[in-house]
Amino acid sequence: MRLHVGCAMWAHPPWQGRFLPHPLPPGERLRAYASWCNAVEGNTTFYATPSRGTVESWAEQAAPDFRFVLKLPRSITHERRLAGFDEELRTFLTAMEPLGPRTHALWVQLPGSFGPADLGTLAGFLRRLPAAHRYAVEVRHRAFFEDAGCVRDLERVLGGAGAEWVPFDTTAFFRGRPGSDAERDAWTKKPRVPRRSAALTDRPIVRYLGRDDTERTVEGWRFWVEKAVEWLREGRSPTVFVHTPDNADALPLARRFHGEVKDRLPELAPLPEPEPVGPPTLF
Image 1 (cartoon, one colour):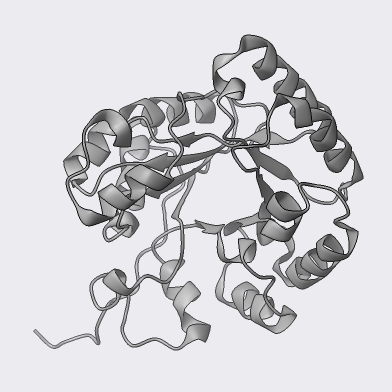
Image 2 (tube, rainbow, N blue to C red):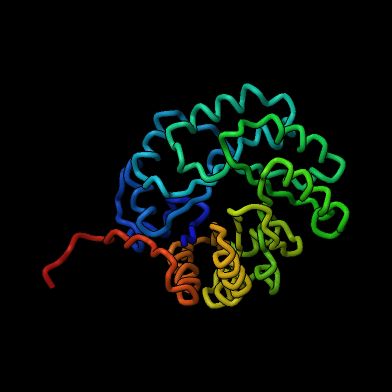
């Protein structure tokens, strides 16, 4: 029984010297992060496809059961809107090959303008993707959260392809006015849609956004702790990503989430032990 937890990145300046050793060369940063969490969002691949050599370094730093949820390039999802993507997709998939089983899912994050009228395009896109990978789709158009018919139509498209629907739960974040610069910035950028929690596959993926106040973040994720316990008891293998507006404490928060689930399910496989931040001392 395994729950995977992680953050939106594996290198973040506020973590250096607090949670992760500092300084660390690029070829060691993922390894240090992977001693805290067993999954990560591959957000950087949205902006540019890394070189194969870079991806080989990722594979060397992460255990075979570590999970990458890799975002497809924006040239495919946002600029081409899932049309005429063959060359970009081929380049991306070739670059990701060294990760092997660590590629848990390829993540299709769609713009807020991608709505019910575009479902035929999404269905055609998913049919053309290689069967060797799992796929997860994140939508932001409000109709997919508020119109029951649109929800059913999207679930039908995803179910036909064996793809998961990735919820980005921001309900706890938008429950109160922003209180920091990071929260004010997130207030203008993050999607404000109802919470969705129905899993379509045996490997649900959740993105949760809390607050910069730890206790408000923890209070807001109670729903997801219960849902993770339910999924695990059903034999599913969920992945939960914990975000806060500044992500300064996202690493220990992700581990705390795992710990709360493990308190309910003691048989849950443990997380690895974090690497020490500094050299060992005699006293």
